[in-house]
Length: 147
Image (tube, rainbow, N blue to C red; front, side, top):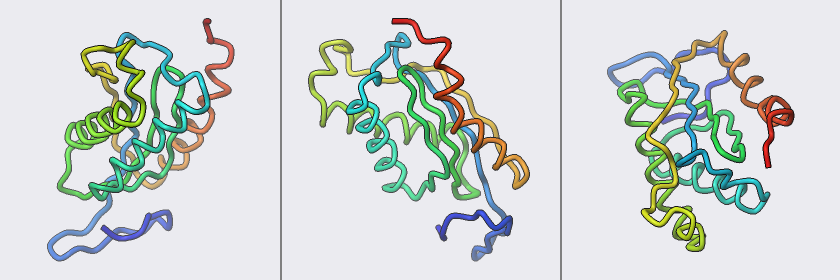
């Protein structure tokens, strides 16, 4: 894939023209607050970014919350949202447990993420709105925090 597309221009490939951007969201298993600590949050973010980079998924915006994740991505036109989610959730969980084996004490079956997911395709106009929404999640959830 080419560089990140924020100039509202379509990409030209050998047999295709266009751009595919998506807003994705998923939760931790049982909605456990696995990422309250900054160290865990940064590790989860790094694992998601690594999973994305290994598969040519461009992360436009990423916000890791204590019990869920928001991400805006750009992918190849041939990819379905379910495939992108499978890669990001599956590989990031594997990497997270490799770097943090103690997390398996809370999730002994090795399932970091729940089966649930949210996906929406985005156009050029909606990308800025989605990016602002993802950035604002920390403030949005400040009032809803339960300890």
